[in-house]
Every structure is written in structure tokens, then in C-alpha cells.
Length: 262
Image (tube, rainbow, N blue to C red):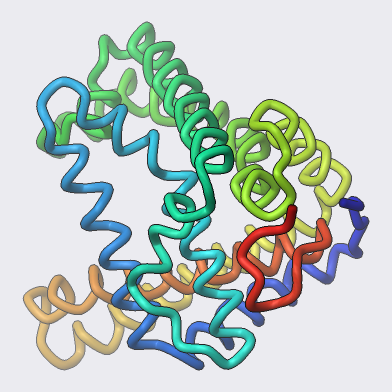
């Protein structure tokens, strides 16, 4: 397993590859992403432990989307069962993936817990417990401060877990080491990831602007509301499709078709 240092422009290539691969199998990726969302949403509805369980399976579910992207890039049609690939990789890999998920849940909940010191838990309740969002809540300065606090602290958390599921699954790296290597890879390729995130921000802003402009001209607010959310989900699916390429360029991964590497 070798870490590759890529030029900044590679971040733009990851975006292009993700979008291109999505449109090779748009129905498959749309279905997989909606299954991904449904899986997480159903778990989060379980009383008391729901949010923690949803966070626990996120690395495994993200890995499933990576494997689906690998399959589509090699000309295969990713089936819904690909989302369960982490649970079919053997007991040792499954245990490591669940430990990784537990660490992710603990870190994320710790960030949410710290945010409660700022606004008394308002932002955490909206994010974790689906509390209603009202203009009064959003405009509250404490709520906004908690939101920005959580966003800033989520950046290093994302760096720790960005590559980790792939390293655990394809290379058998222990969870804590995979987090360390992931953070190092993100830091050493910081310019490429900055370009990558800025490019995706541009895609989302342009896409939302076009949808708002066209739908407002054709049907007003009702059509805008009906189109904006599905379009946002499609763009989010493209984003997750591009994650595989950012990992693949930073670390050597097995050739398409091989799910694990011993």
C-alpha cells in the first residue's frame, strides 16, 4: 500500500470521473443512493439508539458505494447487494469495519455534544433527532454558531474517515491505522482535495441556480419544491460516486472485480 501525491488539478478530474461514471449507470446509482438514504433513515428512526446505529453503518454503506463505482467504471452493472459488501468480506474485515463505524459514531456524537454547549442542543436536535426547522430556529445566533462550530470540526473528522473504509476493506488495515493513513493522505493531497470540494460546490450552486431559474419560470414555487430536492439527491449521488476516484488516486487499490486484497 503506497500513498500517492497528486497535483491540485486532479481534484477536478475526480469530479469529472464521478459525474461521468454516474451517467454510465444512472438508474443503478440513483437506486443505490436512495437505498443508502433509506437504510440510514430507517435506522435513525429507532428510539434512543437510532442515530448512533445510523452513524455506525455509514463507513460500511460508503464502502458499498465505492465498490459500486468500481464495478460501473469497469463496465459492470452494480446490484443493490453491493451495499452489503462489507458484511460479506469475512468476519475479520466485518469486525474491523464495525469498529471503524463505532469510532466514527463516537467522534461525530462528540462534535454534536460539544455543539450543545453553544446553543443548548438546538442544532444537535435538528441534525440527529429531526427536530422541526423554523425561521426562528435558523435565525438564532446560537444555532448558527453551533452549526459553524460543527462544520469546522467535521472537516478533520472527514479527513480521518475519508479513505478509512477502503483501507480496511481492500488492504486489511486496522481501523485506527486506517484513520491515521487517511488523515495523512488528505493532508499530503490537500490542494487536490481543496480543488475537489470547490468544484463540487460550484456544481451544486450552478445546478441549484439552473433549477430555480427554469422551474420558477415554468411553474413557480410548487414546481421548484418538487424538482429541487430530487435534483439535489442526484447531485449528492454523483458526489458519492466521485469519492472512489479520490481514494483510488491516493492509494493503490485492487483491480476492478476483486473486492478484497489479502
